[in-house]
Image (cartoon, rainbow, N blue to C red; front, side):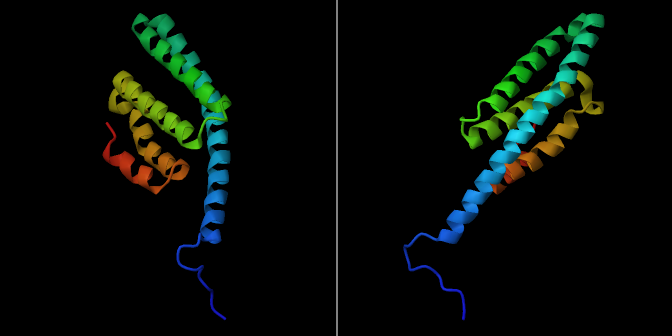
Length: 139
């Protein structure tokens, strides 16, 4: 016997279940990724602080990375904030970090790596439209 489709106009339970499972999975991934990114940024801020102690021109980067770290921690801890908002905040902070890295280190720095990875992260965390949109709008 074949699979029967729901009557015209009736909600599809399979689609609703798939969306629910995907939303739960993305929420877990965003929570883990934000926690990991927050912890991974601690050494970046520390190393930038050490570099700024030798080169005073790096203090603006220390301030910017510190603010970005605080915003990342807020996104990681404020779990009642919507998934789309938290994921978009993560992507925006990633692009800001890419711009700062490109400004500090040029093409030899890690900024270009951010620009390659962020559309893939957007595809996983937010969905296909965002993953397709981001590469065409990278700086």
